[in-house]
Structure formats: C-alpha cells, structure tokens
Length: 195
Image (cartoon, rainbow, N blue to C red; front, side, top):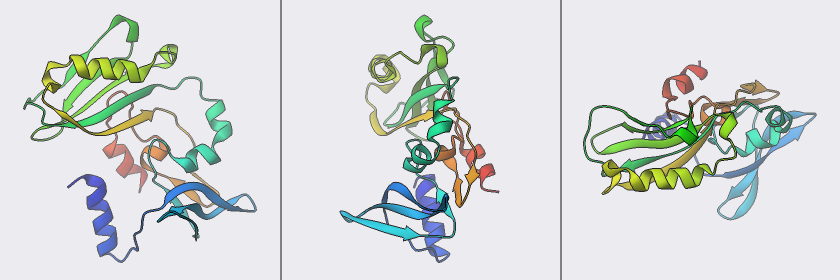
C-alpha cells in the first residue's frame, strides 16, 4: 500500500468524507479561497470550505491558478522528471548517472522497496531548454537495471518555493514544492510542513 493511500484510509477511518474531484480552480470571495470547483463523475461541482488544503501534486491546478505572479518570478528553478518502477532487480545502493550536457544535473536510480525504484533525471536552470522527457526516456531505455522493470507512476517536480499559505488555502506536499526534484526525496519535508 502506498503512503498516499495509507494517509487517505486513516483520514476516512477518523471520519473524513472522501470522494475524488478533478480540481480545476479555486472558488474565490473577496480575494480569499472559500472552496474549489472541479469535475466529479463527469459533472462540474463546487465544494465550499473554510480552509482548502491544496494537496493536488506537482501539477497543482490551485498552485498554478493562485501563484501566477510567483511563477513568473522564478528564474532559478531546478526541474526533474521521475517515475516509480516495479520489477527492478534487487540492489542496496543508490546509482547516480552523470552526462556532461546535464551537469550539474544528473540521472538516478534509488531503491525504495523489494523490487521498486525511484528513477529520474533532473537539471538546474541553466539547462531548462533541454527536452527533459527525451532525456528521461533515453536514460530509462539505457539503464540495464531497468530492462525487465515496468513503470508504475510518473511524476515531475520543481524546487520552486512559494508561500505555503495564503487567504484561506494551505499548500502541502508537491503542490507546495516540498520535494527535492533532483532526488525525488521529500517525504520528511512534506510531513514537517503539516505541523
């Protein structure tokens, strides 16, 4: 069971109501967030709330909508593409792969379980024009450790830092960039942000 599912099931067991909504944008009143608008079962729905917790990942619709100006100011942002792979041959060390064109960025393969690995490629601002998806594809194709592995889930991340809270909304996890895009590490930072 993945960490996200463990958190969700504990919240539901504690009395939280859960249903999936593909969040499109916040509901605003007097420049404060008072809920969200999104799709549920193919229909547009609005959910009102005293406080919205934006935990909708690295591609957060809420972050994009509310922090447009902040995003324009972020010139020094490292970015990464990473994925979880299953069926990876067992190993107990981390692998870093360097390529001159990516430096100071790099590729990595980190073991995270019996046959699972966190695999990614990340670059710093000077190399932002590189097609990171193409590098990632080439990297995983050439990695002998991944020859029999299957991609389980793909993610992207950035090291942007923005306000973690503003007028009725709290950003957590990848939505608040509590992740290191060059390692995929961030679980501790995400939990600390919740205190």
